[in-house]
Length: 393
Image (cartoon, rainbow, N blue to C red):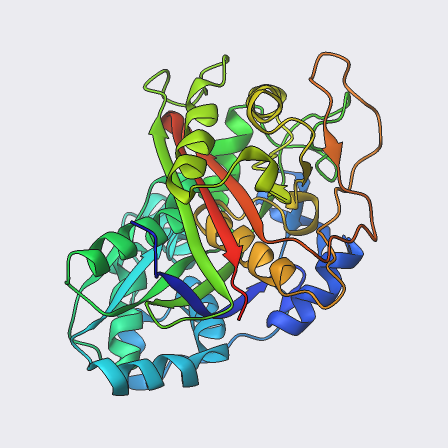
C-alpha cells in the first residue's frame, strides 16, 4: 500500500532550532542547550523543558480567530515549505490537497489564564474563546491559510498523533480522495499537560536519561514538524507503517511489549524489508521506568542490535508533535551528507535488567543507510512504527 508515497518537503521547529538547517546541525551534535529549567508550569517548582525560543510568525488579522501559540508554531514550520505546498496546490487544485495534522495540547496554553480568572472571579475575561483550544483548530487554520477547500482533519491520539497523520494521508490518497497532503503536527507547552504528567509521577527533575539505570521520568517539550506528502517521487519514501493497540490499560503499556513488537513487525512486513535492513531506529524512549523496559524488550526481540537512540534529551517529549518531529529526524538522517545518525545522550549507566542495546554515540556515521524506523507509543497502548527509505536514482 505504501508504494509510491513520498515525503517531498519538511519544515520543522523545536528546542534544537528553527528550520531544517539549524535543527540538523544541533541534532547530529547531540546539543542539549535547548533543554532548560523553567518555572511557571508546576507550583513552586522549576521543571526541565524543551522550549522554542525563536520568535514565531504572526497570524494575519483576517485569521485572528485561529490565533494561538500552537498555530503560530505550526505556521513557522509550514512557512519553511510554503513554496512547495503552493506548487502542489497549483498542480492538483485547492480541493485535492488535504490537511491532516496532529496535536494533543492545541491552544490550551493561551486559554489557561482565562480559565484561572473564571475560577477566581466567576467570569471569563473579555476575548476568551474556548475554540482556541479546539483540536480541530490546527487543521482548520492550515486549510484557511492556504485557501484550501478539500479534506481537513486533526488527529489527537496523544503521543502518536502526528505519526498517524501519515497513515491517514496515504489511505486517503489510495482511496482517491486527495492527491497530496499537508501532514505532521504541533504541540506547545502548557500547565495542564505538565501537571497531568506530574500527578502520575512521570516528570524528571533533571534532563531525561533514557534507558539508563538512573532514568526517572520524562521532560516535556514543544515544536512542530510538517511534511508535504504526495505520489510525486522524492528522495524519501514512506516505506511501511505498523499500527497496533495494546488494549491493556488507560495509561500503562503492556509490560510484555506485545503491541510495540507487533507495530514494528507490521511496518517491516508492509515494507518488504528484513530486520537487518533497518540501519537506525529512533526510539520512543521517554525515560520512564516501564516505557523503556517495554521498548527495549520489543526492539531486542525483533531488531537485535540495531543502532538506535532516543532524541528526547534534545527536544523533550513533544507529545502530539513527537511522531512527526522524529520522522523529521529520520528524513534529515537519510539525506545527511556525512551519513550521521542522531546520538543517544545519557549518563552511560547501563541497566542490567534491560536487554543489550546498540545506543548511538556522537559522530556515528552510516553513509550507506537505506531505511530507518521510528517508534511512537501513547496512552491507552496506542502504538505506531513508521519506516522511511532513501530512494536512489
